[in-house]
Length: 628
Image (tube, rainbow, N blue to C red):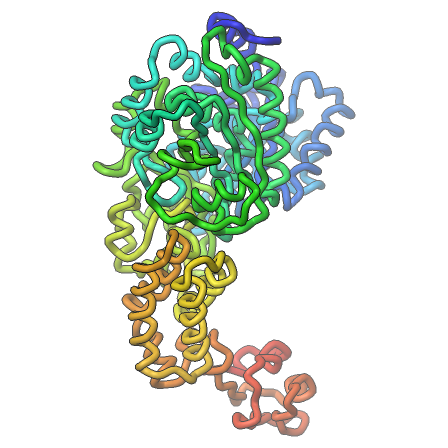
């Protein structure tokens, strides 16, 4: 059906509100009280839960409900990511307000018997907080302190059903813009909200729209940058997979504001589920008259096209991205001119990332003052982070700007795994800086992170503990930058390789103090002279680790040791008195440098030792082989 007016959109919303009536209830009922009531079972469809078997859980739930005659009373859905990836597969049951974690196939029959028939929660599947051993059926600690704006519908609505998006106020912001506001009013509202680009640069979104709108060209473009290239980052992917219509609506509003009639979503081909759901969403929007000509009975005409990226990190930079869309090699251009003046095919172009666009509809509906009241003075709203590394609760979090690193890592993240000590956190992906423990109470916003040598980036947050070598960490991230450099500018193409060579030399115990000076000087030169953001930020991991963990560099250079015991070339293996003479280490040593007889302590010839660690891997006695 094609919606030809805003009244028809509102009528469709009212007709379909029943689809969501049992989810997110203000006053959830108890499990026993819910007996006999219609139930919704939401099975997390995020990438983490998907890989650990959530589709099979959903399938088994439907089969078992059918077998027991409960399929009309209990409906199973697979929305997007719940965020709590550490405990997947996860399911939520409403209106009971119960969450079960790490659900396996044998648990399905138990849940249906105990929960749906007997009215009892399955205690062992409830989340248990490790330190207090307390079980949570709802309001899990991971979600406390979060505020979902960009992720408002992710894990809540069925992403392949446009009617559920409409029932959750979908396309109401677009209707408001087309009915009540002219383009300059929309731009002014976004400017007043303080929304800044969530893709890494933090440029004011309203100003970018205004600059594109002011162009005299008749043809303008809006591009959604969905080329999420940071290792371990899946913020944009989760929005695309869990709430694709929010991105389409954001693009429609942006297109109407800047005067564009055509938009592109540049999404990496490695996201097949996101691509499929975008294709479905675009098709549905066209069918309902929300894309195409005369949208909602207005004069506004707009359509969206998908373009696929091949996975080049540099294509996250807006000029490289546009070259790729044009069919050229993905390389950055010298600025100015900026894309707002001369972008795609030489026409004025506005590039916003997925999370930025997902924030637009709620800002239109709730107002600039509402959004500006969240966050800090210069960084408004919320930010989505992919929390990963040596942290208890890996997952996706959305928090108000100004939330501290400590709150994210120790409250939502549950602290460091295996009771180890926090050492550093890296924000901003491979181009970000490593932040030491003394800055754990730093508020997360654009200015505060930049002041301590890091950056917001697109939202990667990697946690490291005492077992991580910061020199090796810097080398690891630099390897990524070297591999992903497009090679156009000498500073990045050659400079990052030289940095990597020096770091390799240091981790092999061949470094000098002069090398340390070279790292700092060359890193600053590369930052100042590289053509695009990839090269300009590539030295950040090195410069920040030298500043905050200089003692580790000195240990590698002067003492020829790796304090964390990570750099193999610097390790010395030693067999202690705990050795029982089982001979396993000698049998597996590739260098034949371990001697000793059965049932007697063995000895390693350190001069011949390859530092491969095979002996320690084979040893079955705790503390019998150590390295230093």
